[in-house]
Length: 330
Picture 1 (cartoon, rainbow, N blue to C red):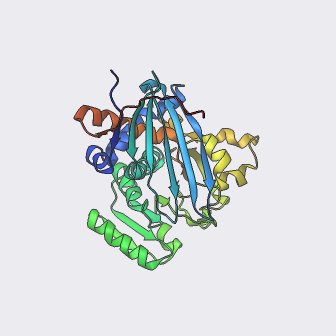
Picture 2 (picture 1 turned 60 degrees about the vertical axis):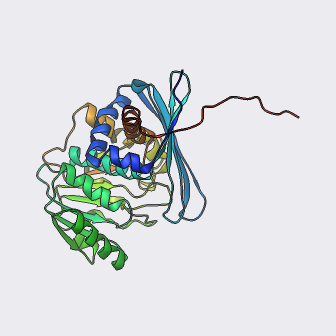
Picture 3 (picture 1 turned 135 degrees about the horizontal axis):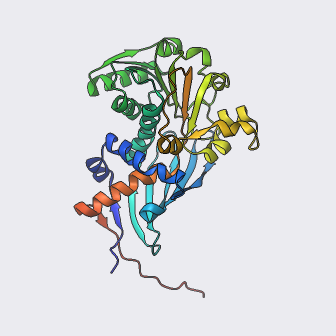
């Protein structure tokens, strides 16, 4: 008899997997897409206010016989995300996972994978722009693949910035500097990560050092934008998480390529291709750019790992078995 589906709590998620585990899960599962063994569903979103949105992601992972969805609504920066997993063998619901921490780890782990592939091998300094809930995991992910000696921090709100600086200092033992300007934050930095909810572009190409790498992680809906168009002119490698999502939802890329048929899209590489083909930063690269907006496969990579661990360790709360009953017609 099939097992009942399970509800996996945030506490279970964080006790079973760490950020380095999430990076490993992505590197193991993401290449399945480029091998034709996994498929992403186009990301869906609906703006419900000027900067609030509903989101849905999904994918099938044939190599694992599991498919699923991630759903949430972001209201003034707050959300309660869930992931639902289903069997590709019989359609059964396998699990519902509380996924706020999962999403933070997944987003950060994608940055870790991109940084591992494209940042200078000897990079040990970083600038981060943004101090919201995603910022600390972003720092941790970069530190996991490029151990940091120094971090510079900038955000528009000095109170938030200083609180974030204090939080990073309490978590890590590298030097952390609070910066008053963008120029101070990016000057000399081999790694720069932007993770903001900005609706106007602010990071210009002249702010990036030659030989640096940029992670653009904050603008996940068309209403948001973080960097200016001239960054494309300096980028020797531009990589993304999912090309279809970028083509339809990234304001930066849509403006630069001017439509789906622009031949320039052929120069963009996906992160699954970078892993499959073992592509890393060219030694003479000016700037490399990794842009991620979220895709079902990255969430499912981690969710499947969590589900397998929960079943093996007897975790999760059994949900009622479904008793299918016909609808009332009268």
